[in-house]
Every structure is written in structure tokens, then in C-alpha cells.
Image 1: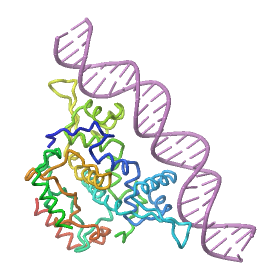
Image 2: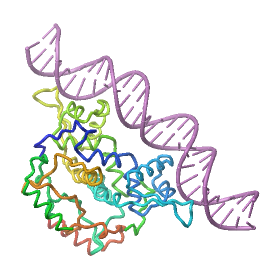
Image 3: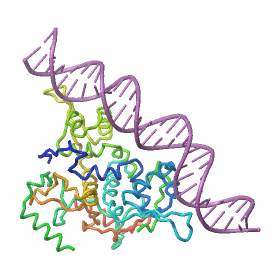
Length: 169
Length: 169
DNA sequence: TTTGCGGGTTGCAAAATGCAACTAAGGGTC
DNA sequence: GACCCTTAGTTGCATTTTGCAACCCGCAAA
């Protein structure tokens, strides 16, 4: 690992999607708001009360999340005072990142048991750890990973990966 | 999903590990520093140059990461001007969260191709998406998940999970 | 013993955050 | 339609965090 040095210098130039993700989700409260949304919170006053966040900041964060397409804002037809905030597909797909963070906090924090917990609908068992997977779906441990530049990738392998991805659709 | 409303009110009281994780990693630059560390950056000046971060902020962030046990600081024996910053096991285990964020940014950002890329050492193929797994390791889609309070979990099931975990060791 | 490097700290300006009070647009009731 | 309540904000001001530039200090090499 760490075999190759990624050129970070062009962060604003940029060849990594992490800064992009952080621009949307890297601010104070963004992940907490997301978590509340995943737990069925939809309204301004609900977010405010449950998070204890300042109203102006909440307003600002919700606007940014909407601007980034992570949440959708909709004035409710049956009571036009009310506004619904809903996760979009883009927002929903932050779940693995959020769960990974939460699991890490659970493991390394002071043994916080974290309720509620996500369970598999099939057997009502709590989920396992978020995993890094290989192209074929088997899970990979840290020691099985290396950084490579795209230019160094196996061309044939890439073709196989593309075929697998197409086949999975 | 969203069947149950997680009580967020006691955020500082608190029953979720997410705020804990965010306390360590939720500040501006923390994830960027982590990424640099994963890419083999070990020294103050290197971080500073590659990230373009202000020196005082970098100093502060590195101290906090060290305080949180995410990085280890070591004055080098062969040249005592130099200081090495190394990821600890706790830091290394943030990789899934970082990759999940990066993959999300890659998918929803403007098609950024992100170089370098993590590959499986076995076949040099780029890794697949970070996945939420069931207790038995199979991957779970969003629709297969529900929130449950710990008190509602299947007691027998829990025992089975514990047995599986023990068996896996 | 001076020069320069690595890893910081300090002082100050700008931006983000937080709190409390206020507003504005609907809706319910009489 | 006058009154009051609810929801979703905004505004003004104090505090904190961030960022920039300059400075500092121990150490090593010459």
C-alpha cells in the first residue's frame, strides 16, 4: 500500500472525487441532517428540534443539500405552510458512507451501542460491516489493496469488468 | 425504511456513534489529510504543499488526528528535525468510509475519473463499490434494510450472530 | 558559526457558526 | 375579516474557526 504517491497538488484542478464529495457533505451538521433524513425526519422544525441546530444554519444547510441535489424541497399541497425535505437517489446513495462512518465510531468510540440499527429485512439480523469489494463482489481486506494509476490498469481486465457490469444490469 | 424514528434529541447524550466519528473526522481538511496519508504522505511540509492548506490549520488538524489516535507522530531518529505522521490501525479503518465518499463523489460529480485507484492485488482489477453487507456477508441493497431498535432484535438471531462472529475469529 | 531546512507558532483579517428575536405566509376559529 | 396559532424561515450581533503572511527555533550540514 502507499506504493504510489497520488498527486494531490491539483486539488482544485482535480483528479479525485473526494473533495467533490466533501464540498457537498463536509460541513458541520451535513451528515447529522442526512442521518435524521434517513430516520424519517422531513420538516424544518423536526430537524431543528431533534438536532438542536441553530435555525439559520439549518436553513443554510438544507438549502445547500437541495442545491447539491441530495435533498428535494417540496411545499406540501394540503398545507402550504409546510415544506417537505426528502432524500433524492443521490442522497440515498450516501448511506454506505454514513454507515461506514457510524460503524467506525461504534468500533473505536467508547463502546456506544448505537440504536436504532439497520437490519436485513430478510432475517431481521443487524447488518455486518461495510466492505470494500473486488470487481467480482468478494470482499477485500486492507492488505489486498494497492493504489494504481489508471494508465497502469490491465486493459483486458478492464474489458472484463465492463462486461461484468453490463451483464449485471 | 424510515419505519422507526430514531431519537436524535439526545445527540449530546447520545445513542449513535455518528457524532463521535464526526468529532474526529468532521472538520474541514481532516479527510483530505487522511487521503494524503493513505497515499504515502508522512511529513508536515508534504501535507502542506500537496494540500495547499494553511500551516497553522494543518498543525492543528494533525494534532487533533494524533489526539484521536488516528495518526501517530514520531520524531525521526536519523534526523531529529523530521517528524513522521503515520496512520494507526484506527486511522486505517477509516478507509471504507473514505472510499465510500470518494465513490459517491465519482458517481455523482462531473464524471471525475479519480486517479489513482485502488486495485485488488490478486488480479490488479479496480475495486468495486463499497457495500453494506448482511451478517453472513452477502451484500444488501437499500430496499432490503430497515431500522430497528436494539430491544426489538431477535434474541435467537443475536445469539447466532455472536456465534458466527466467534467462529470467524 | 553560519546557513538552511523541517516543523511549527503568532498576529491579524475574513468567514462560518450560534443565539435570540423578529418576520412573513398560511391556516383555523369565531 | 379580525384574531391567533403554526411553519419556515430571516436578521443582527457575538463568538469561533479558518486562512494568510510573517516570524521562530532546534537541529544538521558545511
